[in-house]
Image: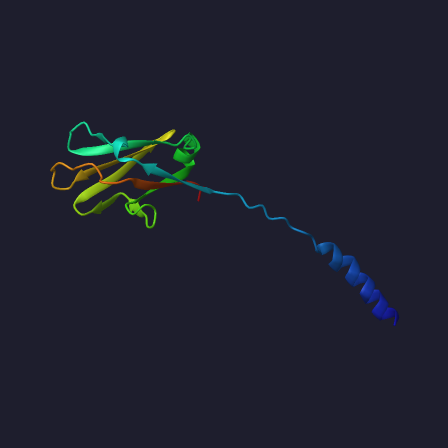
Length: 134
């Protein structure tokens, strides 16, 4: 019985302090928002062959540009489905560019011809992501 008691005491001395509670912190690393681009928000490009617009995104900081990523999606069916851009659809090339505080979107015909303004609103989804270095 003495051996059993000694083993029990030793087990509790060495095993119980090894149990510790760990707290895991969850950090949001991606943020998304949507925009509605009205037909009158598109401007002709300098070549006159396409159209462009700019979205104000004050959350787009140097940190996102240097350590993260920017994704842009367009919806031509009022937000039911989204397509990642750059994308080519029906002979029209949609592109995006960005800098601190803004995202630009433009579109051109692949054959170099003139394009027309969209016939309806276009929804844009913007996703900003922080990344960890490899």
